[in-house]
Length: 250
Image (cartoon, rainbow, N blue to C red; front, side, top):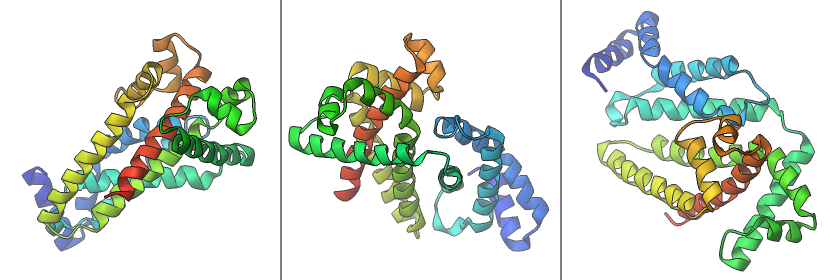
């Protein structure tokens, strides 16, 4: 953290001056907007970006008020997790997703896990369709319908693991250990992405690294937005499984 920002935090902790707190918040507004836009695909069909930015600002204010300079954790790391958590929580509470879509999302995860255990690899779409007793066309449509559910499920797992780890830290030594864990976690996700088929890798890379919306990815790849949603939804199943395995084994 830059020296002037550290000084502002110290001043706020000593005085609880709302003016100082608001100065700090203004310094990090771009981070709120960046995180909100980077997560827009989980809410774009249902919510307004401005509403999510407002939730992010509230989370940023909370982060400023609860941040402890003495723990050695970077404020940017702590605040970004609070902001992501607020967005996930807001999306979850809106209950935008129809019950049948949520139900299919759970059934899809169960089918995927069962086939992965049986086959020892990422199951093909036709194998998933056969296992679930539906035709390939139905599966593809439902994969597109559940893209928000599957993406949110992965984001929740990623957020909860990272925030729980940050929340338990007490000193610089533990923070150094956390940075190693976070680096390993990113490698696990990168390896999972690398194991996807070419289209899956393209879609996930454009989504997470280039921060493109689904309709923008569709234009880049020359396919329909529905097809992008299908590919992304199925890719999230593998990424979540690999992340869950990593969490269980650490």
